[in-house]
Length: 155
Image (cartoon, rainbow, N blue to C red; front, side, top):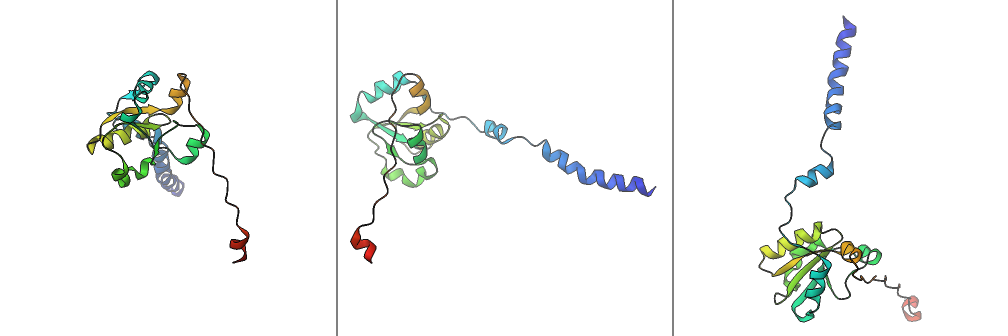
């Protein structure tokens, strides 16, 4: 009889592990988030907007390492997605904005945030798709480290 009690107790402790193992994966949780309302722009649409540079602003919301490894547009404003709401005052309101990320997840959220705050957003761009569709991205080279001057090293 004692053996059965022990097995039951072990089974009770094992059950939560089984439930935990069946929890939804992070990807499934991300899929449950509402999709962005921003239009995802194709290369031709982006190029048409860029043909009028006085009327458009490229806002790249990626990290600097992504700009270095993947590349970006030749002229852009860089504000990482996580910092965007803190820096809205830096963004001109007199231009259409194209938000850029690698696959449009972050750029879609950024476009939605800007729209909510009254900015004119043309849409969200996928940098990697733009390049795959024949567009040209510019690789951003990392800055070379500064060399310490002889005067600064003596201090």
